[in-house]
Length: 250
Length: 250
Image (cartoon, rainbow over all chains, first blue to last red; front, side):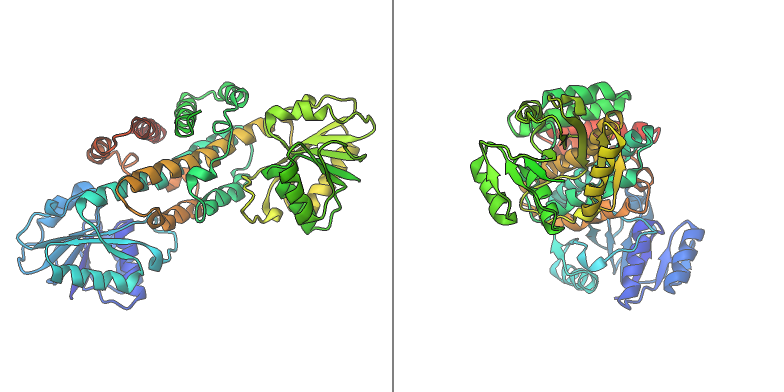
């Protein structure tokens, strides 16, 4: 299957790298950002273009959600398969007469960060069995965890990921503001953070909950509220504690 | 320094284990819960009592915050050092004529979970240099990260930990409710969660933020709000996204 990647951001970069590591040839990376395309091109020995889309059997669109529809119109060929990598778009967002699919890797991608692709779950959806089979085969070359998923399910997978990844990272960022304000190095908290996520590999997070709210320790909750001077910190503090208390019926 | 541990919960259990691993003798574990004391006693070969507190040079109180003051009155000896392990109590909560101290391990403790004690930061506070020196020496036998900390600072360390650990775990628990509701195995999210925390070992969390809110992707935010049927999920979703948008001035 002659494959072209459209896009040059974090997801496109890592998919190109994942294919490169498994010696899966990519015919072209196509997009608007010449600088980023050039980087991918040089690093993984893939031709790139900002103007002429190469002919291929499979076009993999790895761009931001709001750019998917537009870039999909660049594919004027009909006899081909086109997939996007978004967790929150239906495959029908792709606007062309080609066969449509979704190829969603559940991971948070930063260019600088080395990833173990074999552990990343891939969720695949296609119009027919043959296309699904091809995409499953392709994803299975990269990862041991390839599954079918409808758009209905994919939306919830993405939503869960927002809670378990995006919001978690934001808590780290807010926590660091608090420790920074007292000149406490954030590195002190890394073993605690590692243990927090380590625990839930074997323990249901509901059973792993610790801290003042689940102990219903209102003295500490009040003490903390007095220490918090920024309104965003205070709002998070109150909503999270309220939610913890409700979960454990305190 | 002849040492007694008061308490039999998660913190007491792990401190007893940490001392045991380094062959540091503990004269007694003392408390109310005979069953838990017996478990610690058998596992780490430490005598226990629920009635008669052994004579010692150092009493380490590892009980819940609201039980610290009361159990500290059981120590009627004057010529001894007494420390508690709480992040949010001053050492003056200890009520006796002995010398007072704080011995705070920054970690989340569950009995079942094996821990690497050498990485746990210990924050120490004492009335005088000699006591501080003794406690620093003791903690240094367990961990490579032993630091001085006033109560003022300790409060903020604990508060930061609530954001970076307790609230993070609660997000995992709420995330699991969402994936459970759609029969999506929570194990799918573990590589993503590992990567989320792995990232901040080398990257400032503020720079590592991903997701719809930081992209100001209001289409996805609205889609997710429609999917969320539980009010606690929705409240968390709104407060976190609002806070992300404020942090990045979106």
